[in-house]
Image: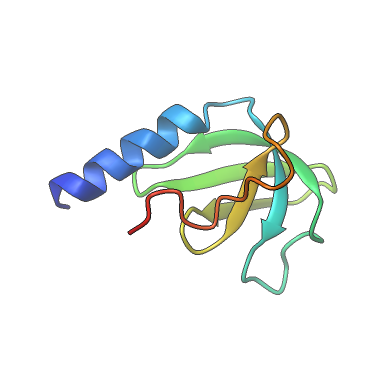
Length: 86
């Protein structure tokens, strides 16, 4: 893992601590909850996947840069499609 990837994961862990409330914008997974479903971050793993307990009872991780979530506290137009511009 290179330095850039390590720094990217540190940013994700800082931005999505346990308990952060998020809203699903887009996840490329057939079993994903519907767009707009809210959930709570459980943890961010060492490869940067944000693991979320969704309000519908499912648990599914979001990969920042591939999937899109936003914090409930963020403005509606702020989507996390690729916050690192990489």
